[in-house]
Amino acid sequence: MASTLEIAIFPCLSDNYGLLIHDKESGETAAIDTPEVSAIEAECGRRGWTLTQIWNTHHHWDHVGGNLELKEAHGLSITGPHQEDRIPGLDRGVAGGDYFNFGAHEVRVIFTPGHTRDHIIYYVPAAEAAFVGDTLFVIGCGRLFEGSAEDMFGSMAAIADLPDETKLYCAHEYTLSNAKFALTIEPENEALVAYVERAKVLRAQGLPTVPTTVEMEKRINPFMRAASAERLGQIRQAKDSF
Ligand SMILES: [Zn+2]
Image (cartoon, rainbow, N blue to C red; front, side):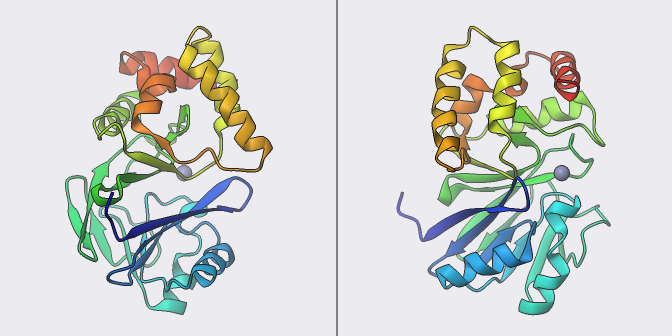
């Protein structure tokens, strides 16, 4: 991949990931959500990157909590779901199907309701990467706080539609607990069993299991593999009380 784009992932709060994307050519740097200002500032400082944008996926506090402080400090521009009035400092509202430029690169917005009614994700084809917020986790999906199983079923399908090699950057490290649950749903899934062993090794070394890929999630994620919205709803309910 000949790209001028670089992505940084680093832990924030108890189990969030901070995510940055940087374009060497234009000098632009975007934070995908703002879980923890100090961790975001430290990562930018370490890499010599200057924050110019925030891309919010949804309004939860652990995703927008640092918006105003970072905007104040850097005069940056904030992009988020257009019909959402719960994004502090929102400058540019975007909807599913929209795209915008990041340096010379295109960013596509995909509407993924379910976790919240206005959740969006950001797909950057030149980086072969998508920032999926709290819609998809490795071997899991977000809780249905504001949307229905039908909503999340459509959102899983939209992510599955991305090219197989697309790297999926989730906003939390929930993999090992998701794995325990997924193994009760598909105990015979060999890809899942093998993946879980690798994830255990990564976590034992303190390494992230994020990003995952579209191809991997199609093989191991019971929510993406659910054959119907009804089935996804059943599994989600079972997971909520697991
Ligand atoms: Zn959330």
